[in-house]
Length: 247
Image 1 (cartoon, helix red, strand yellow):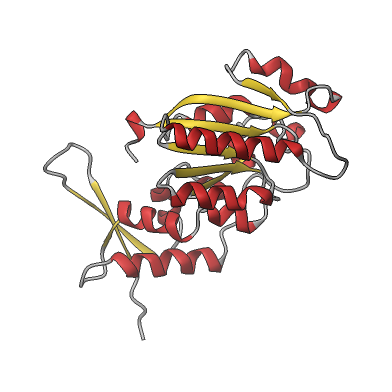
Image 2 (cartoon, helix red, strand yellow; image 1 turned 90 degrees about the vertical axis):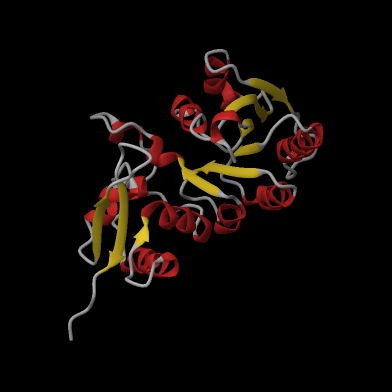
């Protein structure tokens, strides 16, 4: 997707997403395109959505009223899915951002991707894996929280914002480097990042306290990093490879 010229439909499950990081969410979405459609779904007669009401005008998000007609059934999900398909067939957007932690949107994400749409998911760390892997990219709300002194006060759960990278993630990076490396084992970091995203949509260097992939890889002792001149730009090219094991 050409990020600069892409139009994105942002559909928010108001019943399932906290309002605290709405500005950070909207700023994040602009990295992937222009959010031309912004809608949030919920029963606005419920007191639980009061906090959202004050943020809608500030962020130009259109509220969609959906009454819960039947107890135990999520009418909000149905309304959001119907709207998504209407928008898809209108051909007005190039991609979708589905903001929810609900696995009920797994089939919707899959269907949109089948139609050639890029699908970005945003949700909390509790989001079930089927919905995560159904998206092209999945971003945790927790990592969008500002790194300020008051961040601890804004955390509702006991889950930390920054995770410690495990051997599983290191092995994932190592195998990905090997997949796209040349005969000498070097791989262009841009190719590594793209393939990592395809393998695991929720892989994000910010989960581990790094703004970019380069410093994350530099922090791991099992990888080599090399900068090379770029004849087309003043920015250097970054290549990485797995360190050779000495017998």
